Each structure stands twice: as C-alpha cells, then as structure tokens.
Length: 449
Image (cartoon, rainbow, N blue to C red; front, side):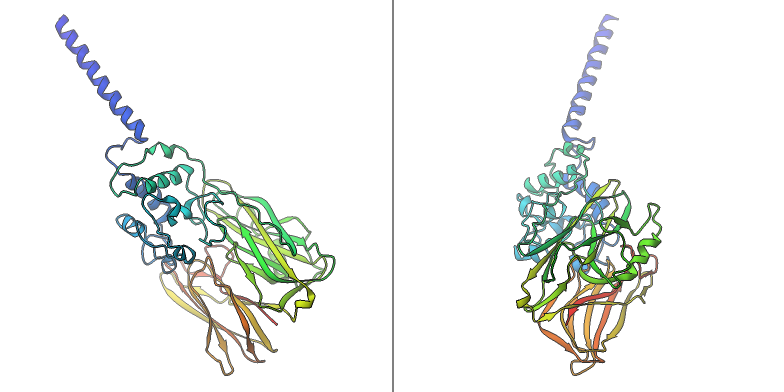
C-alpha cells in the first residue's frame, strides 16, 4: 500500500511538471497555439484577414479599389504579394520602397501605412492615408508586424513573442502642427471627436484675419487620418451666415440629417480643398484669388470611424499670399456637379455630363471628387476646335490629381467641359449620389479667370 502511494505521488508530480512546462511555453509565446502557428499565420488570421482583406479593399482583384493599389491580402496570396514586392504608391515607388523588405521595417511600405506615428516617415512623402481605411490597428498588432519584418519576414517561422499582442491600445496618431505661412494666414479646425462606428461631418465658420484685401495663390492643407475630405467654402449671400467659430454637425447623434446644417450648404461656393486633406497646390504665376477683409469662410471636415474607439479629427489650412503687384488675373472657382448617378449592384457604369459656359473662360486648374467605387474620372473639352480632347484623367479617389495649366485652357462662350466618370459597384445595393462615404459623388472642381 505504501509502495502504490509513493508511485501515485511520483506520477502526480510528473503530470504537474509537464503541465507547468507547457503552460510556461504558452505564456512565453503569448498564445495557446504557440509551437504550432507561424508568426505570419497569426498576422494573416488576426490582422490581414479581419482588417485588410475585406470586400472593397484588399480581398480580391474584383475590389473597386484594386486598380489603384493592385494588392490582394487574402489568405494564401498575401505573403507572396507583400514580401520583396515594389510598392505601387507613386512616392514610395520613387523611393524604391518594397511593401515588405525583410529585416528592414523602416523601409517597408506596409509598416509606413499602418504606423500611427506622424513622424515615422518624411513629411515630404505623400504615402496616402493610413490603413486600415476608417479603422485602426492596435499598438500590439503594429508592433507584431514591425518585429516580424525585422526578424526576416519569414513565411513559416515562429519569430516573434506573441505577448506583444497584449497591448490592445488603439494606434491613433498625433499630427505635427502645420506652421503658419510666412506670407499669409492660417485657419484651423481644432481637435474634435469622432464617435465609434460613426461618420462625422462638421462645418465651422471662420473669418479671415486680414484687414486689407489679400491675394492667395497657394493653399496648403494638413489633417488626420480617416478623413474623407476637407473643403473650404465661401458664401453666395453674406447676409445669411451661420454663427462664427461654432461647430455645426451635418448629422445628428442618431445619424439623421441635421436640417439646419444641410440648409446652410445651399449658400456655399467652392473655394478650395478636396478629398486629400494633406495637399498643397499653387495657381499659375500671376493668378490669385482675392480675399477681402474679414471674409467669412466655411471649413468643412468629414471623418469616418469604423472602430469601437473614439477617434480625433483636426485640420489646418494655410493661405499663402502674394503682393497685389504680382497679380495679373483674379481666379474664380469651378464647382460642376453631376447628381444624376445610379450605379446598379454588381455592375460597372460610366456617366457623362457636359457643362457649358456663357462667358470666355480660361481654366488654370482642375481636380475631381468621387468616392471609393470610382475607377476613372476623365475631363474633356466640349465644343470648339479641341472638342473631345482629354485634359484630365484621375484613377485615385483618395488622392485625386490636382492639375495646373500654366497655359490656360481657353473656352469660348458656348463651349465647356465634359465629365466622363466610371464606377465599379461590387456591393449588393444600388449606389447613388449622397453625402456619406458609402454613397457616391461626381464633381469637377477647379479655377479659372
């Protein structure tokens, strides 16, 4: 009996020892699957599949945005599409960045796109909005990818201690303030919150600080990620102005339209800005916009938040001025909107509309605005000897081309511009014109004199 008891005690301690050893191994790797799952498999299953390879983004070649990024991150394809491949982004490609460069996260475009530090890459490089679009990874997920790349970006190895995933803090950015211009002035939308799972679009009227007329030939903008646009408007009727320096929401907390704010939009005249909130454009030499003293301008910021965190919005606009003696022509704005768009579910469709002018028009800048289903935005000359000539083409809805014309496009009365815009609707519903990021738009913006 004593011998049996001793044997039992020996077996019991052996079992405990084995259990503790296994537990220690699991804790060391931060997951109960440690020892059986490669680090990249964890990245695929817990990050890429859930946050990136979703319909409309990076799930397949049929995604509406595929033509812009050319990157599929679904399981079985992501690794070979990432490691050692050249980034398609223009700024990254010019710097010869790879999407994932083994042993070098700082020179891997994937890490740039997910890193929440505003100082991570050069302020002069336009790498586009941070990913995932409308969402955030956790600091632990970002760190896992960083360490995986620096460890060699193995397809099969268990190279990173998965305990880094315990940091579930949202990887939200802080942006470096945009310095005010040496000549000119700055207007700003101060820090404001975007509730979880909500699109927040706000307007705030600011009066320009100039006490004499000034002439603006350059607009420089900066904003936070997850921004859909920043647009600056002037007013048609200065006697119908909302109160200054107060935020007006386009949507109520329940998502319904704020009728008062919607009504004030009817008084808007496009002044500048667009989809890319980190943009900088200059009008041709001798051309500028005139701003009278204390001119009321409406700053319009639109952010979308698809996370369970409360995010932050913030925007800067610099108005760079030139001496009146340098101005030959006063620029006016183009705001040509096609509201008649309905894209059937599962179909691609092109919409064409011509806008004619009743006065001599010299176009000096063109840009476009559509949303994520947009594939191609073409602008052609309508009428006259150059009828049908393509003068503008854009295929990137997030960072639309701002095209200046040092030699203006001269349009006689009765001539104009035609927008020819193609959409690919891979959703299960018909999508038409609307104000949210899930709707579509079709707008030519620009400047002329």
